[in-house]
View 1 (cartoon, helix red, strand yellow):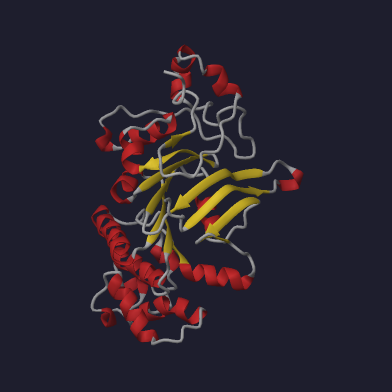
View 2 (view 1 turned 180 degrees about the horizontal axis):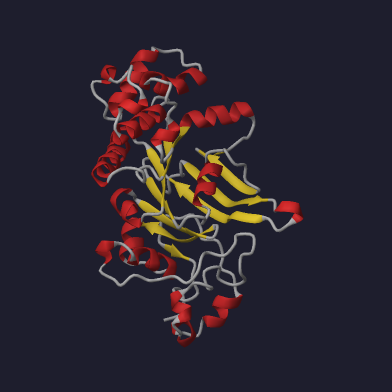
Length: 326
């Protein structure tokens, strides 16, 4: 018996109108994605691939052009009351704690803000103390009256995480949660997220450009390119045996990969002018090397689009070369 996902997106599209009647920007162009209860999913890709727009759409901040988002099996509503209730259960953690925290607010007020917005009727001080403690700021009352500039970068990120935890969400969306932190602090924050998953059953979507981070924290990984998921599956499968040339290129630049870096030609295409065929073919190292031609799939790469990957826990890849008959 298959357990229903906590959060699911089906055939999700987000398009932004072009200027002066120009072509629409297809930022998210047909995405299926599931996140299970107590699961951490890493959404990986270059800057501009659409991953932040997808995350914002899953949060209800950007309504989809078409498709469906459901939480706990219930379709997401976009009325103010429905969104307020949803955002209590799904919280955002941003990458820059300095930009996320009001420099004029104390730590206590920063963490209590969500409680006040949602009209929390319990003991506010107790709830704030519990959230700070869970985020690793102990004893919590030592931090109540401190201001962001008095904290280290890691402590500021923990305050941001506490502000999300105080509402006891079921899922957090963390957009590059350690990108602005020193290497020594990154590991502490990643360990914190794993501990919260284990202790609270908290689910997470971690948005990152770093496949190394995905390896350290995720149960599953979804690799995004030009608005679509091009490879997804259990992190061990995708990162130890990548099938898509784009995933291989991203992995090759990690110091521990042991492989020569793959230099992709040019920048990703304009999402208002997505090429015909496989959307990666204009940069694909397998196609440019002649390997796809020798395998007899080069014409498909140029001319035939690939279907949207289904939302499944098994490894999936959208690539003519990777799925060619052996």
